Image 1 (cartoon, helix red, strand yellow):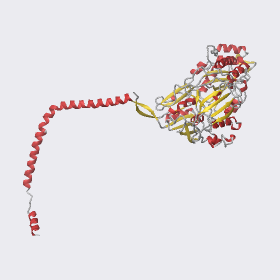
Image 2: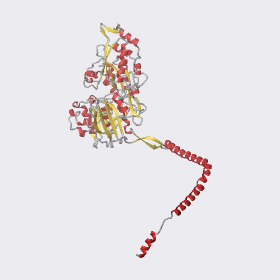
Image 3: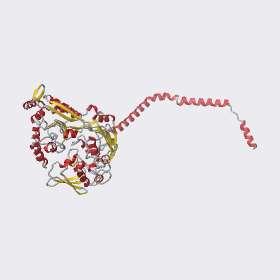
Length: 598
């Protein structure tokens, strides 16, 4: 304890000498200053002398870094490229409405587009415009030409994972044939019988040879296991029409109503992973329906959709070509001025011939938006072959006036009259920018001859107007400016044979000529291409002489799509606008960087 006290006292006696500390600090400061002068300030002159070399080295290093970066970028551009990637949603705009998703009743562009994606058919058209097997793996025709045996692909599934069989195909055909079903396809199947051989084989029996029968096998196949218990008369109203089960590349998810008054609906679909040809690259597909072309153009501007159909005739200036590509392809249809041969004035062939001479189809096509192909026959260009294919006479208003004069229609006060009656024609077409412009041009050409022309543009989307019943079936017109779908085969029997000049037939001109009837009936009953070609030439010559219609142009399908997506094959031949989906499995919206193949 004494030692501890003594230690504590010694500690208490320790004192700090401020003068010593001050001297030591000054000594340290002096040493620091000398070192700074010697090692830093003293060497500044040396740094200044080598700074040029330092700058040169820094510049060299910078150049090397830039060169390495440029080489890396060049490497990427040379050995990498942007490629389509799987996934994403493709949104396409079409004209509506969408009232049903049952393909037996699909009529609007949006309804047909959705049905093509949701359902499969026995055959479809490839990018060359020829038939190829869809569900069908093969087809054979017997020596009589009236029995067709179709073999189906194995392991084709419905979207609910049930196996698709030949019984589903037979069920669909019999459903179409049943008058209670009320399908517009029934007229093509009345006399055809179908029988099931086994799960993947079926036979069709025709009452007579029909050369174009294979083209009728493009109908959508419906599931027997879902619809067999539904009364045929109730199929249209069944929930299947709002929530269908198909076998196509996409399966149904949802039908969304966006705006009822503007007919805006969206069909949401997802890629079907068990599709027989492989799953699409897209994850989802949406069909957006709109009431007008203006609505579609607005949807493109706002980015609601990736692409749009039904823009034919739209002014190209309305499409932002910096972001969108416009693909224009002719389809197998023709736009005609169909002359009602039973009307009071047009039953005179001389008047019909005068109208044909007064029609300058070349000038008319120049006034239309987009590209249109010339047409002067009841067939698509190229369907008749040989050097002796007949053609319509060139426009000649002087000859047209002479014909009318000879027929007694004299020009009095600027209007042609005969026995106190004015040469007046009522011309009807449907609401469509291109049809309306064609109607305006055609009417102007005819009025120059002194013909009184009244026009009527019918809005088929107006529920208060039944266009089919009040206009088409009643033949309530002198002239109908209308589009006829001809297809890949030149069988135009339905449009020009006198047996089809009925309320439910498609002979909208009420055309009747025995020579024409015989040629059409004979051509469809022969399988030899050369004989069919000769028969159709004979029909075309008679048709041109009788003038039951005036061919105006072959329309084109204009499809708009975003430049960043991959969709339709711009070089493909389209039989109908909906054949754009022939390469649907390769459509994409996503992109990625990939290395190029050496």
